[in-house]
Length: 181
Image (tube, rainbow, N blue to C red):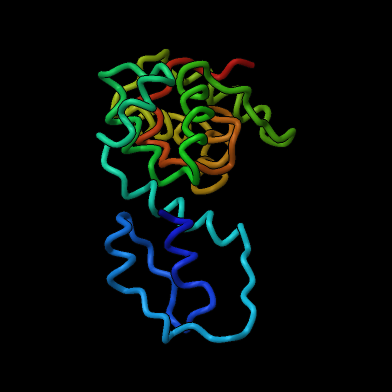
């Protein structure tokens, strides 16, 4: 539908509107809004549309895909809620599930090595509950004096091996293993 939404407006004077049903596209389609100049299709224009379309999907539309990835039924709805805003295409879910299931190789800057080692000593073993991130970061802050980005970014990268992604308070309860290195 992202492709159809883009194609229905490319070359017209109207902005691209994302629709999730072909009938809705037809209702707003008007040949009179198209110019005679050649149009340019850029596949990169599809990615933000696809991301928005996926973020709006209800769990029921992705439940089978999540089951196929091996996401346990009791975790799947929460996994989808946490990940839906952090994917572009549904295939991105596979890497996120692998991270949750298997853990990550931490990404640790040399200047943060001592800090992260101390923080990981304060990390309780999984399973982690709803308050795990808040409790852990508070303990690390008290022990090290770090705060703000200097506290949170090295911890995110230690747990996920990534600089960006879902809110850590929401992600941490989904993580099954501590960092692997």
